[in-house]
Structure formats: C-alpha cells, structure tokens
Length: 217
Image (cartoon, rainbow, N blue to C red; front, top):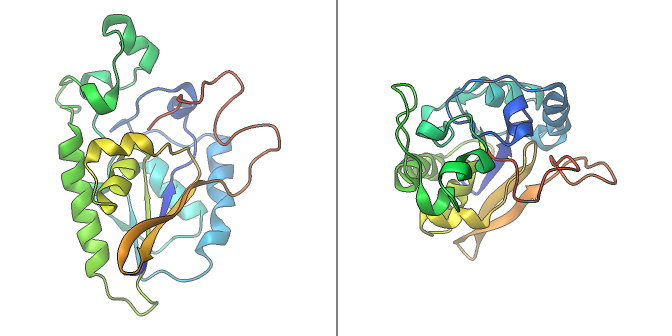
C-alpha cells in the first residue's frame, strides 16, 4: 500500500446538531448526500481495496462517491460513546463540567452502547492499518477507507505512530477527504480535512451558529 484515501461520511441530523453518534445508525441528510456526491472526482482512479464502515451513513457516502465495490469492515465503526450516545458536549458538561472526550472518556451505556476508551478504538484502527499495509493490489496499492470523524482521527494518530489520544489534534469535518502516505518510507499526512466544494462564506460542515470545535461523529 502506498496511499490511503480517507473519506468522512456526509452530514446526518445528529452530526449537524453536534450529537455524539457512535453506533446509532442514521441516514445522511440531503446536504450530506450532496457532500458525498462531491467526493466522486476523487474516486475516478481505481482502488485495489475499499473498506467501509457498516453504518449506513458511511455506506451511502461510499456509494454516492462512486466506491461501489467495497468491503464492509466492522473495525471501522465510530467510537462507541456509551452513556453519552446522542448527547452534545454542552449537554454532557451540564453534569460533568469541563468534560473532554480525549481526556475523560465515556461511561458505559446500555447493552447496545457499552462504550469504548481511546485505546480500544486504537486496537481497531491498528488492525485497519495492518490490513492496508499488507495489501498488494494491481493498482499500485491504493486503498480507500470510508468511516467516521473520531475513528479516523485515531487512525491518523496511529498511522503517525502517536498515542490514540493525539487524535484530538486532527479536526475532521463531515464530507471531507484526507490522505495518508509516505515520505522517505516514513508515514506522513499528505492531505487532511480537505473539502471538495466549500461555499464562499461557510466553513466546511459548520453552520454559522456552530463554534469551531462543534460537530463530531
């Protein structure tokens, strides 16, 4: 593998509202589908391996972006937010002042949302990286991955041989693309959080009333 293209899925109603969306399986909004279609120019060249999260928001993004021949990989699910599933950061901070996911983690939820720590997300990310690096395809080892905001941030940290918590440094918006590659045989980020089309007066995926550290998942 010599390049990994990362696509974060398009907008959902929960990502638009800033709600933590781990295993809740939501569809894309109309805007999210537009974001996914805008990614299509990135997929015109063939990929030897395409891995997609089981979530329908990721699968729909892959399909609209033109990545139809994909494999669903359960390791690509978003961070399991446990008892904070569906809550926004301000709502969580009402009972836990100063809470910060990357430092403080999440409490267990119900049976469908037991919760994960950063190290557990990293175990899954490491498996995806190993799978990509071991791939030897006929199209120069190009790999595409369609997944979620926090998971892909952990993946980027692990690619750079950093602790999973350092994913906090890599803001990632919905409907954007990133690339992981190599320089002198060492892993690097070659592109990060890049929009395909961005309206002139609106930052990617952030309504005018949303702070810069807003949407997640």
